[in-house]
Length: 413
Image (cartoon, rainbow, N blue to C red; front, side, top):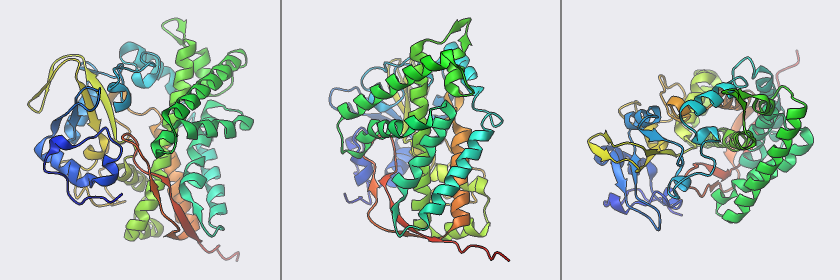
């Protein structure tokens, strides 16, 4: 599909629920217009769903992320569930639980997500990434999306959850099918079946961990106690499901987006290779530039005024990270990919009480990929047509064929 250079003069005609919008409209132009002309925009109802608010400025998005008094996640946190009226996992999955229960379960899970606890997992990420890219540079061409970026996060989350090695190929297949609706190639029924199979798998694994606990997240959840009571089976299974899906998306799409950005901005590839920028600042800029998760959402539980607009109790409010991360009020030259950018107050991992619990691990995975690319790859070239995701939630590529030129091995002398 061709991308239009401009956006229709009638902002009311935009359909942000339609995945095709993001393939046919220049997003930078669209979001700039919304930030400038309608930073708190009422989106018309589409089909049987209700209308909803669209927040595009960094300060407004951050304010709503932070406010869990006036806004709730328990009636959905993305367009797909918000417009249907709710999420069946509400009150059980961390992402769609609020208040005391959210804080207590999050504290329990954080035992497994600190830098010290994740040290061995991060070591595994680095070794796996190095081994995988060492193989790829010997190939004439390959699909970076499926053969590299898809492999690292899922293996890392499996390490974190303690998934047996023999089950990982099966679980990867289910994960791909669960997300396959984003390519437009499979039906929603296919995705639903895969999600149910993932839930069944983790139900059986959690039952085993109760009897034989290990040093992994499932064991922490299966043996955890909140307010004097163990977590329910549904809480354990749904939070494992959330980790296996959520832990894959941001890292995988950021890795692919980084390679795409280097091809479009060779001067930044040179900056990374030469060491003129730190890996730490490069990681943050890739996260800002790619912004794999386009939006999250809330439902208002009280009347609240945002930038002069009255949002009424019950209204759906969507928070657009893709726009907030290009806000001119916060970022100097936001349309420029700059690996040395600092400060970099992007909202890719959200903000406030629901700030991504796996942010440290996501950064570590992207750090490992950038570091290995810098050391092992001398040059990058496109090797075929890249395929964009078909989604109103995830942003990036489903396929990205490339060819890498290997960095010469150092002289043994």
